[in-house]
Image (cartoon, rainbow, N blue to C red; front, side, top):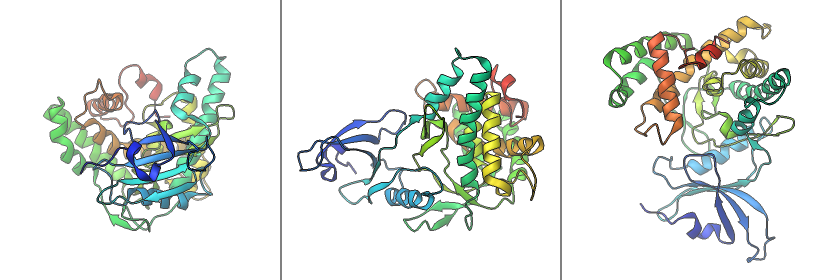
Length: 345
């Protein structure tokens, strides 16, 4: 069904809309009140439109419920309005504009060089620790079982994923993008080992797109000011969000900070340490192992997408990482020189 554009949506009357950069959906806008309706001109909010067919029926209200659920636990925007879609209008979420700079831009600046190496490492460690605490806090939010959120009550529709089956499901798409039968078989063998590592963990709340692009940081203190874009949130494995944070950003100081923040916030819920254990090197190694294993789900999904690598750098990087993993049989592998910085954290 063809929906009106946000510029024509009567629920957004009185707002001037400007697309926000950073995402791939083209559905997020900065909205500024123009003052023509007796409201204070200049007030700004963020508008998320749910017009694409991929969105769940109650996507806007599910996200609003999730933001309410984690408010007080994590820095998230306040919800002003949430509307389900109907026969004529798509779902709509209006939230406050949160201050801060996108985490991917902050990390790019910190890794660009120019600063004294020790100061640069300290800054990366600080930013990593702040991001890791977010993943750890989510890992400590228990859920009754794994699955997708079905409505604004956050009722869970069960969804059990077994990694080797996940690879089999995506194998035709991988083959279309140039993977050989041998590469797919090697990937499946890695998935079988990873699945055994992940099996049995209690379900928790998972953001599922917790990469620095969806997190706002204070550019001075490097603390998190906002966790955004909960479109893919679900009940899942405690290491999933950690895996997302460590997927492509592998500078040693950053990785160290992420792991320390995660282990401190998750405690025993993260599965990397037992009762009373301290977040030392064995716990860091175990957390990294689980994170890389859990992130195979997203890497396989991304690599199998039909998008051209030239137009979607995330798909390109996912394909490169997944091929390195299949080639080496090692979930820690990375393509090219990045493998040297990867290690096993």
